[in-house]
Image (cartoon, rainbow, N blue to C red; front, side):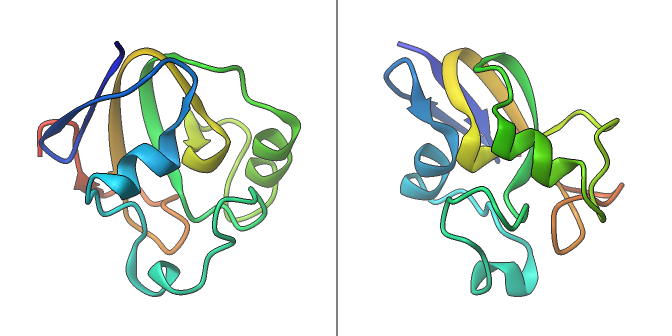
Length: 112
């Protein structure tokens, strides 16, 4: 079973599980500030669940690519939308600051 390491938690999941659902179901603080209330609930349209993912995940789909190509995101960053990402193997997740998680300051790392 794949393992997700995020905010100091190691979470086991089934292959192809949705990263957003895994993180939220296990109490990981996925959203920054007001985006906890104002987000698209996993539709891939708002971009507030952007995280850095290291490890084996699905290829970015058209929703992920399209939303991350619009400001304040940039298609050149290595962020992914958790709601549009499937876990295929062990992964480490990092969250950055900013309403959309697009900032440069760490909010949390895989280890905490």
